[in-house]
Length: 166
Image (cartoon, rainbow, N blue to C red; front, top):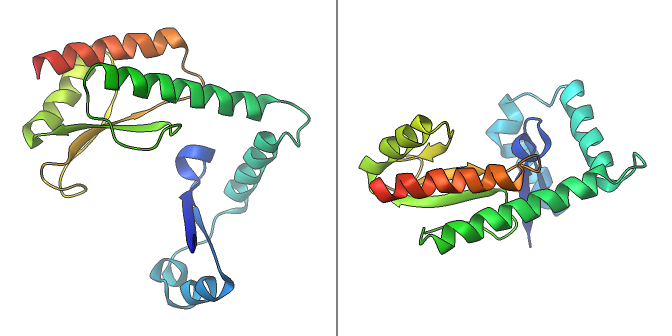
């Protein structure tokens, strides 16, 4: 892999992201990237929050909280993804990822799906054009380690209801 990049927003509750690559690539990006040239750096508070999250994940705080939460989010995500597939939904994304895109395809379904979920007290994130191709509309479920199995079952029940009417 020549370049690896990621975000600190969803995973670490911070802001910004990272790029890991060969020194020549990083030097080029530092010199030419508009975000680097005209953007701002992470605040010390946010940087420390991200470093603290890494220490907890790594167990450097002397607990298993990080490892336990990672196991929980992985289990929750894979359960939710598998259940959506069993319902016949078209699901994208990688196994183990807590962000689970489910395709809605038709642009007219995007707002309707969101409204119907909201009527059932289920908050969802929908994405349509121009962020995705015109027939690439989707809903993104964001799964947490804090979700209980009952929470996920209830959400899936509501998603099933909405899918049936749309």
